[in-house]
Length: 280
Image 1 (cartoon, rainbow, N blue to C red):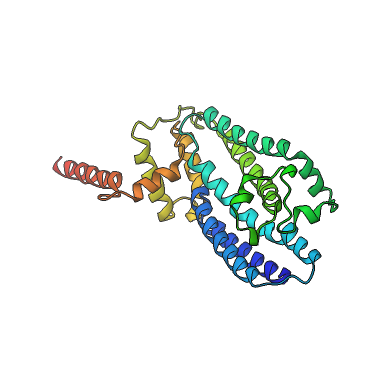
Image 2: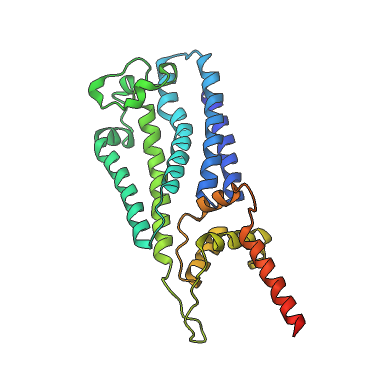
């Protein structure tokens, strides 16, 4: 079972690497990451149900080390999807406060499970027979309600908690990186010629549609710039906060008709300008 778990983990990590190589958009890679993680966990569970452990040590090792490594990926991407989906559309301050509130949730989980954190992080094994063997749960050991809803054939009282600890480490990195990106943005810029920057007076939806089109065509830095960097540039250049631009793009993509509404308008206006010039 350990070799199978390691094989599935390697496959999942390779799949996740390819996903991140294809898109830098959190909402998109989180959705794909969830699907990939679920598929691998289903494979693991199918094989696991038919497996008989040779001894308790093997079972403990699976639930303390192997399964949490895989399960943590699903928890991480599911949390990222939720965080990004619920991110407010507003000022940098509002978004920064939102990210900090999410960090506070991680801190709360840590404080609520401090004793187990210490047990797990220090490599203590004295209570492994209670924590990582099936059917050995003890309600006095701070159980997650999730445990009572889980398939008891494929869960112990604390394997989910280990997976949550691992996922929270990665979520913390994500949130701190997002806050750093916000702090690196400037509210306005002054050009080298001394002229004040221009302000976008059209709709944010229109600008997002334009940015996606430019990025798709690869006309910025020969297509080697990540979409998020392009968005950050336009936000700075036009003194506008595009908020959850990826969610807006999903709404644009879901339009029943005229999905490229703004681009169509631009084309019509340019043709009219050309026709007017021809008449002069």
